[in-house]
Length: 309
Ligand code: SIN
Image (cartoon, rainbow, N blue to C red; front, side, top):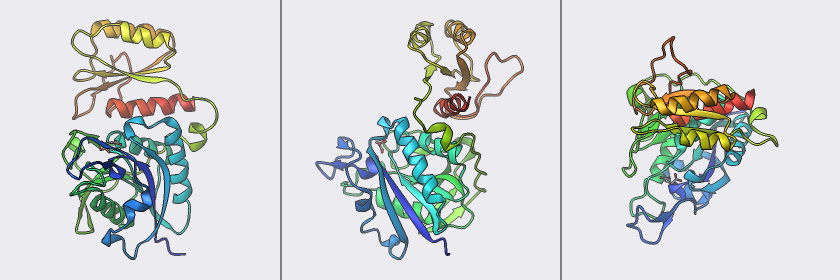
């Protein structure tokens, strides 16, 4: 059987957003239009064997563990089908990097799983969603692509590297020092480095099921930080803490004392950095393990570790 089918899963976001006026790029409602609607009228999709499914219809700032579980299950289902070449997920830009990393860590897919998005609602005079969808489908069909990738504004990013760095411009993402995986130019995919080998660290069985997900929060170390927030989180039953440290993952002494007290009570603590580039360089004298990626991605790994425990 030829694996030539592309599955497009809709989850909402600005790409499915609608505004009262075509010039309105800020005051719109995300997650309004069905995924089938988003696929209509894109010339590059003519002749592509497409299937679509609506998984959710949310503004991605409001995404929940239940939506992540459902999305992961549907991605796994479709990626398993012999006729499927790859899966595209339409998603809001705000938490896209978290969903992409979550899917990579849970599914570690060998086939392409490509997330895409838009910064302007579908009703905008010059909406960016249709081109991003066309580019994402090109990437999902391309040779040499595997694992979880994100396509936006003609650039292809790896799930581990991508961060949203701008609240408004059409290309809001950066892959930092790693740079993008490649580009999509007039429907042609040009990879400038190999796609990273996917590395699943958890399973669908571990993330699904009736028990709730562990409570894992991020605390920021900043000038004038104190112990209070961590104390409140402990009272509230937090099970894991990621500290977004300054510089090389350093922590204000008052916050550090509170984290030490939390660790003594069995709470897992991970250190990350609030710097947008680079990664924490670990040292033998570190009090808590350092995570190489951003605080939001460190939080996903801590969640998965606690779910697996
Ligand atoms: C969202 O993340 O769902 C809204 C913002 C966006 O997609 O740009």
